[in-house]
Image 1 (tube, helix red, strand yellow):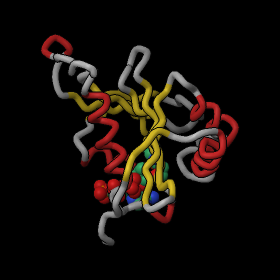
Image 2 (cartoon, helix red, strand yellow):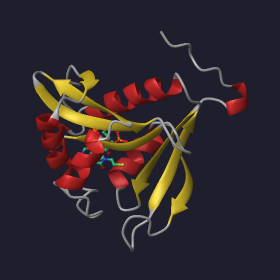
Image 3 (cartoon, protein in one colour):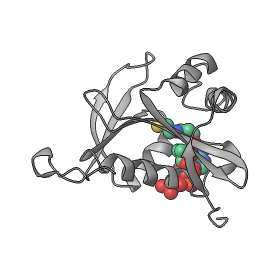
Length: 165
Ligand SMILES: CC(C)(COP(=O)(O)OP(=O)(O)OC[C@H]1O[C@@H](n2cnc3c(N)ncnc32)[C@H](O)[C@@H]1OP(=O)(O)O)[C@@H](O)C(=O)NCCC(=O)NCCS
């Protein structure tokens, strides 16, 4: 395996970077099978209620992660994607570690969904301590399920959010 590249994480840039990231996802599984096109993915990346971060290697965006800190399953990782030629080199792990640290400052759980057909990603999450807690049958497209995953550091009752500032 090649050595892990030097990765920095920052917020996603403006419309041009959002468009490039949307196109990256739209060309990749699982979004191809889930029929999420670039226009729809761009709206998700531009949604200011979400937190979108990119991984940068050298000068280039090598991946992205989308976090939702609102709603019933807050602390939800809505998407993570690494550029195809950069996969298997640790970039996804750096993005996931970053997102978990950010979420665990405020919430005791990280949630995410993985498609039933996405075996590589399922393995990736299970190795990182996620537990499969539910199956959402035929959730996005008929014939495929979304598996709800959770990683927890404490019950809500025992959880102390970190002070901000
Ligand atoms: C899943 C993904 C984000 C992991 O990022 P990454 O940078 O390849 O991950 P790392 O190098 O840190 O770790 C590699 C792990 O990802 C798994 N993986 C999943 N899809 C992979 C792919 N297409 N290429 C290489 N590794 C992949 C590998 O099996 C490996 O897991 P293992 O260590 O348990 O064997 C990335 O492969 C990707 O963007 N896949 C396509 C989009 C996707 O499936 N996103 C998840 C949606 S829920």
